[in-house]
Image (cartoon, rainbow, N blue to C red; front, side, top):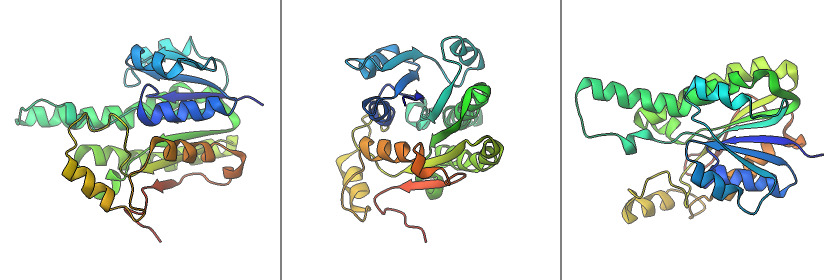
Length: 240
């Protein structure tokens, strides 16, 4: 039976891979993001993928989006975000620091919270909410890491709220993933080699690695998994 999947930040990288994975499995997929161009590229050649522009940090934009969405959403993938420090200006005063910190919180935490709240009465029983976190949450990577750590903490409460409705809520926490726009072309070869060497498997992750994990958490096989952070980092950071 076909499901309806909403993937935020679905125009590039991980979001695009997630959208294509679900669409290729026979689901109907809606991809959202701020830039129509990349969304159209994600949807190209796949009739099951529908692009809709939306800034998920903006309550008014989310309210307008609701009019374009179906009444039932089986899987919500909160993928929109990224390290906004990579786009910050060079100012060093306290006000600039506050702006930069808030930008990361808005992009990576508030966007997920607002979107989930906006769709609350449309999330279907037997469905799933999956957020994209980051290994940075455990490495102390400034405001971006703090935002992703906050996302994981917030998800614990969300899982308890949605659980009685037979909806799971989890976080997928990637390590270094190649072939994305995350680093905005600012990643040096030396830094990339260091990130790859840190992985026990000796390779960078791929968007397909994350898409497969998201799909698992949204599958019948994962119905007893909720309130968790699932690390997908090639062994860069181990757990016990």
